[in-house]
Length: 538
Image (cartoon, rainbow, N blue to C red):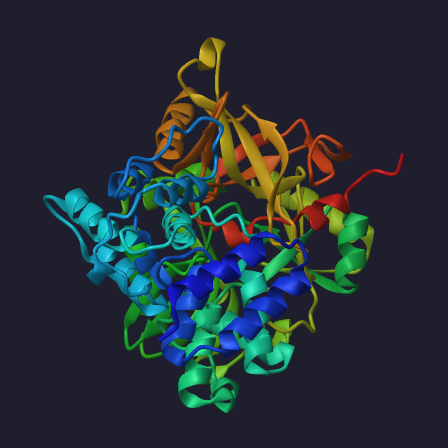
């Protein structure tokens, strides 16, 4: 059994290097030294998760619980912003209270079992039970081990290891070609699933992986363009233009009359859209497959903003006052046939054969910048966000962003994550209302701040956001708090500017929050490099 201190040592090394290639090489080498039983937990924890899948959200342990679990009083916070550092200091000064029986080393598997145990705790006295579980491990943990456990629990890893870095490391460790590795992880949903199959059944088993009903895959992503000219140049001519719907992207899985709807984060949201599932069941009866589409809120024949649709997600049940409609735009699997490797046109024909024209997103061939501009104006007039241009020959690539799909929107936007917030003043006194917005550096995997904003939210949203951010606080500074990076927001801005103020080297001018993206995870935020391409030549 591999000791957990080995993972803690690796994490320290990852924190001390900014080279993506070095991180990939170090993780790959470490994974090769592990058994199948230990590799999967190690991969999960290196990504900053506690458990794979939706169960991860059940291991919600706050900063106060961590502090209560320490076997000795932690030092005053002072200027310490890093929760892991605080735990490390506390454990370093605990003295020699440990009993001899507690001296045996902690293993990777043991920490993973701890997280499972924390997820199973519920009901009366849950906090006390969690404190007892954590304390039993902290008593045996070295300062570095305790620091890593705290960082994983609080989602504050600070090692610049995004899921993409882990995926590359797994591909390297398994020795599979890059295309196969990316495909498998996109279909399975994460690097731990790929590692589990390869280590238990052999690498060749990865080549047999294909989409399965009721197991959602990662969605293919679109690149953003800033003008009709750029959009058509990126995707190529001719292309197909579809309206950019301002809703929730979903996968529809169906078999023998049962229909389940999954969000882009691969969570089952059927209960929130039972009316949609029921309407699709009659159309898809007797078939089996996976289709992709968008659910939007409607008022008559006009689409409503995304925030209206979010009421369905928050209530977790159909809200009769929010009428919705689903539009389908892709076919992934149908009656045993996989369509990922087929062209957009072939997938579209398949989709039309099973869903009918009424459920399809309309598309139009565009061959010139004038065509794109005209279709863009039409989409805006109908109440949509803009256009998505698609290459007619393009395959479906799960989880990847490329130029085969290009989106063109009314305003420049970026999906960013809140990493800190400052207390407001004046009308905003008592609210956390100046948000630090971060994009991901694709070279190092770090989240780097590219701007701040207090614009875009209502008073009610400020109040709710304050409660939410306080619940995921992992540190403090003079003017505010540091938070676990999990709240994704869509931000509108006027332009990208050079900025020596931020490590990213760029800043968004006149940033304002357009909406809170409950349907997106931190792994989907835009990168610093994507934003930097928009720098104006001066």
